[in-house]
Amino acid sequence: MAKKNRQFLLAERPVGLPDDSTYNFIETDLPKLKENEVLVQGEYLSVDPYMRRRMSEGQSYIEPFKLNEPLKGGTVGTVIESKHPSFQQGDTVTGLLDWADYTAVPGEQLRKIDRDQASITTALHVNGMPGLTAYFGLLDIGQPKEGETVVVSGAAGAVGMVVGQIAKIKGCRVVGIAGSEEKNAYLINELGFDAAINYKTTNNIGQELKEACPNGIDIYFDNVGGEISDAVFSLLNFHARVALCGQIAHYNDTKVEMGPRFLTTFLKRSLLLKGFIVTNYSDRHEEGTQQLAKWLSEGKIKYKENIVEGLENAPDAFLGLFRGDNLGKQLVKIR
Image 1 (cartoon, rainbow, N blue to C red):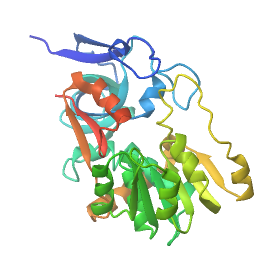
Image 2 (spheres, helix red, strand yellow):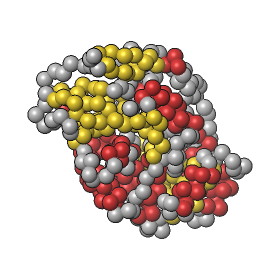
Image 3 (spheres, rainbow, N blue to C red):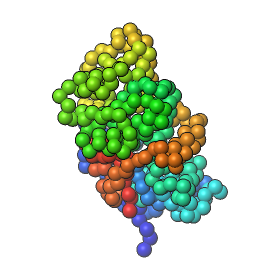
Image 4 (cartoon, one colour):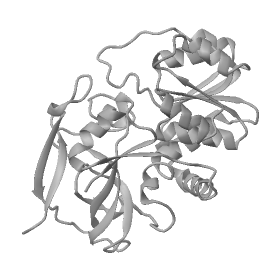
């Protein structure tokens, strides 16, 4: 009996949080390869907050998913068949593939990975897109100096964890903001953060930030936005830098939320606010992956994974990002 391919299509564009009506889970025949294409069987799928933006129409930093076509995400898998000279059956690769068991993709869109170097899943976080996001956002925009104070929101996520650890490597005081005592204990006890704040239980996040940052804040790595960022902005030091990476607090908003108007503060204190995406640094990805792999092998960077079993559970794993379920990188084990 011929193998079948399960895949998720975008059935409709969600308003607010995605739900079952957002997706269509279907079964099809395996895709047939064209010249220079590779057939990859997925092993692990990454789900990431930015995917929510791709489910909506409108201008953004990445093209929206198309209706009635497969959703896509970072994937690690095995080459089953190849019509590309650089890949052969059995190679382990990573790339932006369908939410599916199998994907046919041009070989130029794949990168080989070495199963013996580190766990293959690290290609989807520490030594992949989230790690590179942390690396370039902190070092290129934040430009940390020894003794400075760095605050990271979404600190227990795949990007935030790496940001905090790189900041510690650079000799900074690091304060993380996350959503549970378990997460904050991990940040402090396992990753070496100097302090952590539970934004879900605090009565006054501004006061807790003041106590955790007695010398003010020199660098803010913003993954979240919302009231958390409002509180941080009031404590930024003269010439502080803000790396604007994500706004997960707003990705499911159905109306524009108005918050404090902070541009006067940025003017008076000569502050830098720069938004970025990791593809801005595509010509330097090799630099980043080599350095991250070195820190990983030296034990200077640790990681945590939250793995959901089964491709059929990918939508719930994705929603878990907005519920705050994940400690570390949220992955789906496809089979």
